[in-house]
Image (cartoon, rainbow, N blue to C red; front, side, top):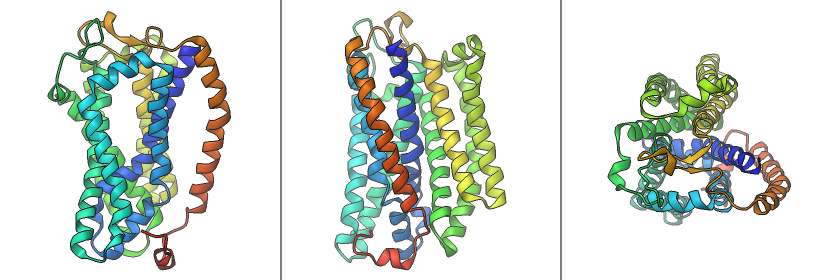
Length: 341
């Protein structure tokens, strides 16, 4: 029972991370397309500024939960996906450095370098996360001893790349909607138009990915067995369709909320389809890492659950306060602050 509870929490943590850091990654990936002037770029940086580092806490938490609750899965996952995860780590470091270093020197060349770093540190993680999770859904070639029988290029298969493209489009849509909320004037209009342009491409890729999931993975098996799980893919579909409806109405906060629901629904769709596996083996299902053969002791899970029940609401309350405090549109006065990017 405790293993299942922590499996659900594990999935929720990843969903929250993708929902929150998704708009940061998507907005950074859109910087070259949306940042036409220095003023535009500063607005984009400051639209992410108060949130990006707090959002990444959920990534650390999801990784920490994997380590503490399912150490067997953690060991196999981080050895199997070592190259991809190191690339992800370096890209995220590059993004953080870009935020802090860009404004240190008043030079167009200097700022261009860090703008490129922000773009790479946003686009690459979005792509890698999608590739990684698509491969997990499909199954990783791990043997009976949990040893990965492949290379980095093994992960770059059609389904994995399709997952990477899906994540990039999800996050770009999410990010452009966030900028439509935070920006004003011409940049706001440009962000609104970008969200509307990306949406039909996202729709096509999402449909193709769902269809490919039927042939490449075993995720649908749980949905055919437990009909009530269909609420998760339906939630994702509802979020996708409602985001476009709200775009047409000019209700950008609602559109961003619907986009959030879409991302959460997509993530939980994959996680629920995996159960009881955490890391399926594509070589032999019996060699998969599951909630039972890779979990910590019941005492460890019980102590962790007590800590989580106390700390997670505190973190949620803090982040809710931060989002409420910085929910206003960015003005010239905001950009004039010494703390501004």
